[in-house]
Image (cartoon, rainbow, N blue to C red; front, top):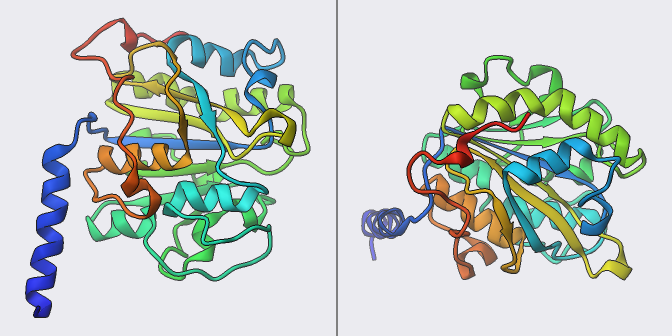
Length: 268
């Protein structure tokens, strides 16, 4: 097969995936990743009032799981569809498809917004040479949300992501940093995803994951999902051909409303 034929075949495969897309398209998606708390330490926790308001008015996935331990392989799974056999939090230089380069190939944009002290193990794009350069400081998160990239990851530092700091501290940080975007997203065809990397060993890696924004049908959803399902859904939203273990999954479809419904009200 010639190079031209191979490119055409890849383009046809991508077109086929687009035709099969069953998720809404969004103008902007923000994925907030938090740390090391099991589902039942967040859900209905009085120290996490903001996250629980989002869960009330969004789609709460009650059967969501991390895919590995420790932290880093979970971030790699969500970003690239594979843990790359990484089983530690050390520095790695990896090769393979990932959401940042897939978006760039489709002429769409990606950014990873981090705080000054966010550790490298929580910044998966830094492990891929072709994704470096997409990182931004939280101070650069635009006040005009229409200027956001198509897809953004938001990764707080260890004091604000529940790794070292308390649930209450993180909840207040999230409300201050993310609530304005969440309110805006409801009426501007945009989406917020909140998830955790992993949970404590005794809790079976059961984590808190929710979707909030336009087209979201509020409720509790019990289907089993993990980081690969979330990535598969994200790729479907962006009409990108799936890769890695995300290609073995189906996008999450139960959470989407048809037309304008009460799901598009803001609850805060």
